[in-house]
Amino acid sequence: MATFVDPLRRAERVARRREALVCGEVRLGYAEFLSRCRRLVSGLAELGTGRGDRVATLAANSIPSVELYCATSASGRVQVPLNTRWADAELGYALEDSGAKVLFVDRDPGPLADVVERVVRLDLAEYEDLLRAVAEGDFDESLTSDDVAGLFYTGGTTGASKGVVLTHGNLLANTYHTQMLMPLEAEDCYLVQAPLFHAAGSNSLLQCIGLGARQVILEAFDPGAFLDLVEREGATATLGVPTMLAATVDEELARPRDVSSLALYGHGASPVAIEVLRRATEAFPATHFVHLYGATETAPLLTGLRHEERLLGGERQKSCGQPVIGVEVVVRAPDGTACKDGEPGEVTARGANIMAGYWNKPAQTEAALRDGWYWTGDIGRLDEDGYLFLLDRSKDMIVSGGENVYCTEVEDALYAHPMVLEASVFGVPDERWGEAVHAVVVPRGPVTADELISHCRGRIAGYKVPRT
Image 1 (spheres, rainbow, N blue to C red):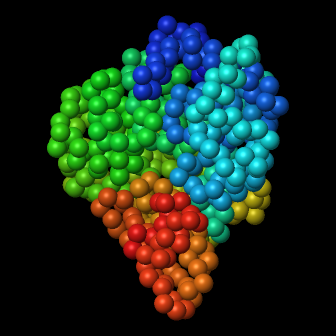
Image 2: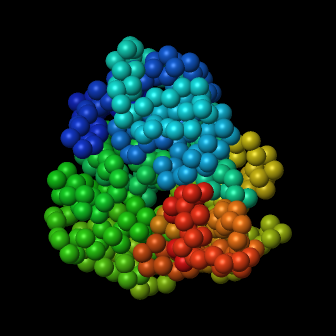
Image 3: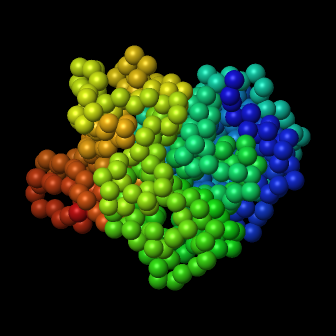
């Protein structure tokens, strides 16, 4: 049965003399990386956690983030990666809802320290002291593909986050799907630029580890730093959102680096403008672009459009591609019947990658999972060859810079202001962000847009705050 243990165990057999991770000036070989993961297993036990306990991480991309991703789940614990852009209230809710015992954090945890039993600071000596104080432990060989590997919190249509329950089988299936759409070999170098707290951001981890490939970690996205790493490390593959791609294209065309090594660039989470893709082929002439579509609930890949650069200007360039092997996609009418080719309906999917459900939310789980199919909330159509075209979202959601923003979350924040009588939030097209958050307000009395924006900043993450 496929679990996190499998790629780690394979790396121990075939890649111990290869380089595993690069972050800043730190370089780890597989032998050292795997030893640290095994010591972290023992460290988690020293912190009082056992099989099934939730362990949260709030940190920027880093080597410890990768170690926690691997060791937590491979030891039978349940990882809870948290969005570093969330406000304390949002983070506190996720910690309380998940019942996390321990929080690993790379900053002052503030009030979050009161929600968990133990806090381990990654930005101080605490984490390294923990690893030094213990011997290597064992990965849990008794795990099965049905065991829970992680809770990945995503925005909620009622204003509260939902913990997406992903099993070992879900995430290993996604690893295979990633390899189908973005095939790598042991000699490849994957540049991690997307946040690892997203299911898509951590796409490459098990894939590369199982292959014995090298991963270079960008702690925080910066287009210049990204291009410098491509040139310095000879990066061959990466994944980002269209906002990242657009910024990187601008930087490369203005100040060119040697990016000839970059063979694959996967992108998803929001639509990419055709002009951005045209300029991307100019900036990265040796690169193949892959459009990826999915959701946290699908671990996350459902479909992919490979060699997008060959389809520029064609009808299928507007599609999300075809389902990966092992995933079925059916577009359905509201009564559940399958739509004919070309007819719009809600996108549904089933496969080994589909979540087990929402943590502590049986009603929402029942609504999303029906007869073995996940109802995505996206409206789309399939053509005669199985290419999926997205038309709209039935869920009340904006995708801005690759982040999901539910309108009700923003409206709730606006309604907390005493001068707001009515509020409506929706997305508007934005060249940089894909979609931008826009709010229309009926005031009770005198209030300015700047006051309302400032009010929202104290209650929700920055990317959810209305731009206009």
